[in-house]
Length: 84
Image 1 (cartoon, rainbow, N blue to C red):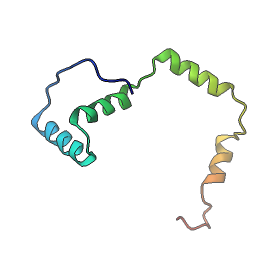
Image 2 (image 1 turned 90 degrees about the horizontal axis):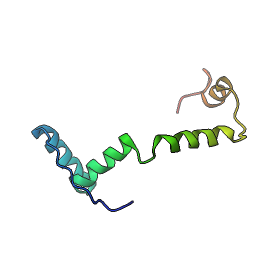
Image 3 (image 1 turned 90 degrees about the vertical axis):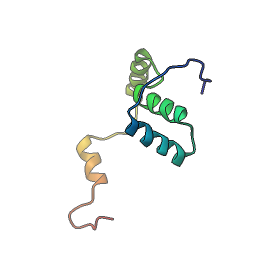
């Protein structure tokens, strides 16, 4: 992960600030790190062109994948099987 080098100030409601502070304490990270992780998860690090290229590369792979119906029948328990 590249080091943080730009500062941004945001205003939070008191209740959101308290929830994020509590969550950061529970996770053992700073609130800044918690927010950076959330922003990365929501908006990602990869630009749209890279995503399109990655999807195209995955689509070009020759993988042993069956139809969605066949995969569902292989993974879903039958009516007779007990659900774990």
